[in-house]
Length: 261
Ligand SMILES: Nc1ncnc2c1ncn2[C@@H]1O[C@H](COP(=O)(O)OP(=O)(O)O)[C@@H](O)[C@H]1O
Ligand SMILES: [Mg+2]
Image (tube, rainbow, N blue to C red; front, side):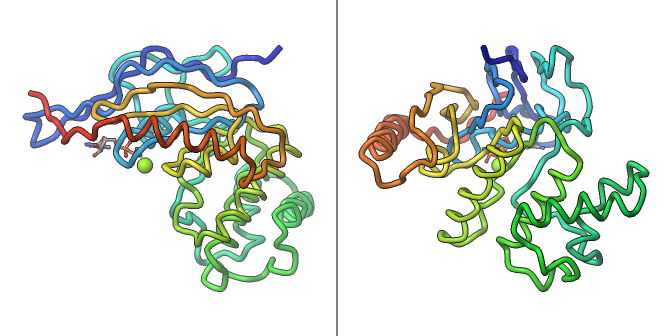
C-alpha cells in the first residue's frame, strides 16, 4: 500500500498586479495526492502555474485558499526535510565542488571528517569523482546540476522538488541527466516532484503525470505511466503515451492572459 506523502487540498493562488488594481489567477482549486517514494511530474505550458504550485509545496509561497499537508502536517514555511533544485545553478561560485556539496552538512554542525566522507560519497554517486577541487565556473551545465543534486542528497531530504532543473541543458546532456536522476531516485528512495514543460521528459521520468492548463492554472488530468524501467524512449508504448498527451495539449485553446478586478 502506498502512503500519502503530500496532500494538496483545494489550493488556489492569485497574485495582485498592476499596483494592486488587478488580480491574476495563477492556480485554481488544485487537488492532488502524491505518494511516498513516487516520482511525480507536473507538466504544462509556460505560465500555467507549475512553479507557483511547487513553491507552495516547498513552503516558499502561501496559497490564497486551501492548504498543503506533508506527512499530515500543514506546510507553512520551508523545511529542511524538503529541498528544491532550480533551473538556474544555485551553486556558490567561490566554493569548490566539495565545498558546495558539504554546505548543508556544515550548517548542521557535523564533524569535519564525516562531512567530507558524506560529501565524497554523493560526489561519487553523481559521477563527479576527480572534480572535488574544481569551482563552478570550471564545470559544464550538466556537471553543475550534478553538484546541485549531490548537495541536495547530502542533507538526506525526504522530498526533492525540482523546477525544470535540466531546462537549460543541451538535448543529449539532458537525456543523460534524466537517466541519472532516475538511477539516483531508485537507489535513494526519495519522493520527487518534478516540474517540466517537456512531454517526453515527463513520460521518461514519472510514475504519474499531472497535466496542467493555464489561466487559471488547473490540473486537467493525472495519468499513470505504466512502463517498466529503464524506459525505452523509442518503444511503441512510450510513443503512444506521448501522442496521447500531445493530443490533449492540442485540444486546449491557449487563452490570452486574463486579469480580473
Ligand atoms: N509574484 C508574482 N506576481 C505576479 N504574478 C506572478 C507571480 N509569480 C507568478 N506570476 C504569474 O502567475 C502565472 C504562473 O506563473 P508560474 O507559476 O511561474 O508558471 P510556470 O512555472 O508554469 O511557467 C504566470 O501568469 C505568472 O506571470
Ligand atoms: Mg516555472
